[in-house]
Length: 286
Image 1 (cartoon, helix red, strand yellow):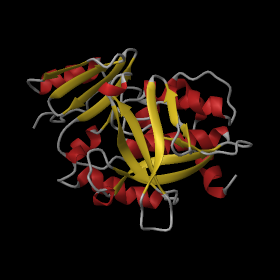
Image 2 (cartoon, rainbow, N blue to C red):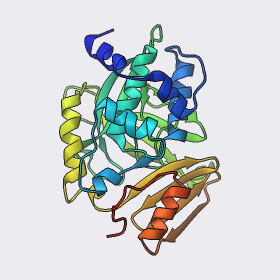
Image 3 (cartoon, rainbow, N blue to C red):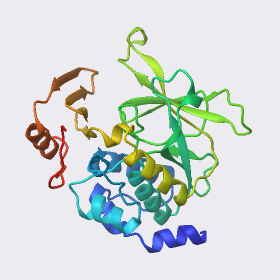
Image 4 (cartoon, rainbow, N blue to C red):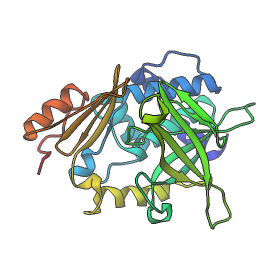
């Protein structure tokens, strides 16, 4: 174990984390445990940007993440918080983790036009020849519910969702990987593959995420500093709050949407459907 990984595990309470996500499986660094812990985290901890909406960048210190996402129980976070915490859990279980930075390319015509603002993880298990892409902090319905092997042009199905990794042209010396999600129903005529984010395998450090985190949370042009953005898995699908729009997507692909009228309604929705206690004094709809 590296010195950095040892420092991480020494300051991390694995028992409390696993209790928070409801994982009671075998604590060993293999593919089955990786899939199980990944899915359990996704089902237990919501994605939310309320700290950024309140005008500040959330702390990425492990003690603060434990207090907010684990011991607090009725808060979530966004990608840097989720994946920093998840990486610590994986290292405590014995996995090797490389922290990556990705370009979110949903709807982009050119990948290069999007900056690297998303954190993802490359995970290696002892004795397993192929690493996995893991990510419990992507704030979109195309997010991974289970990790996928780092293998191009192969479809993976996990927890009811379909993903694949492909290569994209890239002028640099490293291969550009793209995570794609299948959008639509099982009938091929009603769905298609959509790029979610693009990344290389260059390692990023905590200091890199501190800068990116501050930029994304405080830049007035960032969507996370301007409106509430919250998502969560439900037993039957996925719910999303984006500004004053609440969208529910069921497992069969049915989508319902409604507009919320005021901040009090948003607060009630967050407390009920998302299990989030909104910080005192936070304005939710401007």
